[in-house]
Image (tube, rainbow, N blue to C red):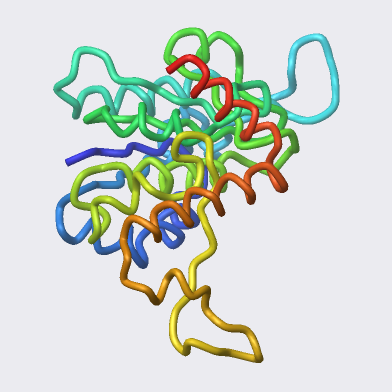
Length: 236
């Protein structure tokens, strides 16, 4: 089982988004566990304040080091691992991708820190963060949505989460290729027919067609990934 620990100011937001569908079933089946820690619970301020003005001036407020660190320590006291990877979701991090999802899924414990305001005091980041990760070159109001995106992608790689264990490996971005087109019943809809090869029952031809379609789709829609695919296969 993989344990996700989410440090956040909005635990309800995270749990409402993750405790449904495939991930909800994975939690019920004991494949993953999601633990939210409200950073506000660890502030020493009587008004539950967790932010303050940044030294040197500037717009906005900054999350303080103390409540973040104490929230982190509360998690570490409940984990047996000597070292736990701690991910801070920030636009300054490396862009999240499928390779990262597979790598993170190998961890038994993973802590994800969700920032707010203008960020978090650098000193606590230096103390606890092992990985700085972004989900794209844009700014959101907080780290909760990126955390949920990452957990969804990571959890899919954990054994037992998906009903068909192959599906996590054959989806888009596997080997840098986008997924091939897929079709279901009826055989004809709105004047459009399912490709004949998919009705043939000839598995070798179907696999060949799917690879061709993946190559075409990747070349047209994500030429950056297509170049990575070509480079990867030149090395093989």
